Figure 1 (cartoon, rainbow, N blue to C red):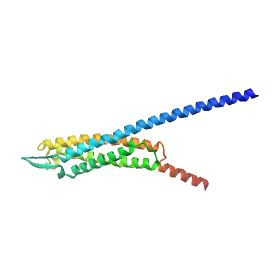
Figure 2 (cartoon, rainbow, N blue to C red):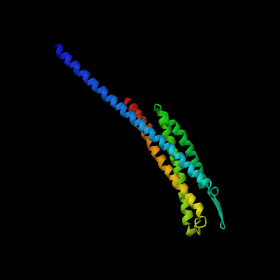
Figure 3 (tube, helix red, strand yellow):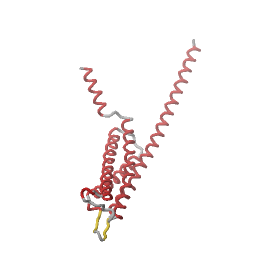
Figure 4 (cartoon, rainbow, N blue to C red):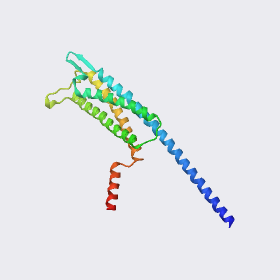
Length: 209
């Protein structure tokens, strides 16, 4: 009888030890995954700073004067919007990178804040790039039906700088799209969406009623 109890206790202890080892391995894996994700996220937040500042400086210094007249970035609202959008995104990238680089326990308010801000900034910089692309297309091709000739034929240097700023801006857009995916993963992999919570609570109320 005593031998049977001893065997049973030994079996239980060995199972408990194995389970504890599995839990420790899972925690170590989760810790490594979280650390790697934080490094990638920090890089993706720092990289757009240089991109946005470069696109901003190129556009600020973009002006041309020749026998056809003069043109500057301040002549069109699309160019001014691009400058402001890149400035806002550069500031946000620096601020968010500092916060993300510091290891802190994840909380729901923090996850929701990053998710919403990343979404907003992504749409801001995407809208700036889309508007600039449309203006550049019209400047290069013109609108023959409206008797609007191509402006890039007369102001080639100005258009080249616009194109460079546009390309850099869309690279920043790619970074922000990846950041939006990461912040979405951080949020919805750990916390339920509000709609889900509300639906569950409504179901509970209806069931209890």
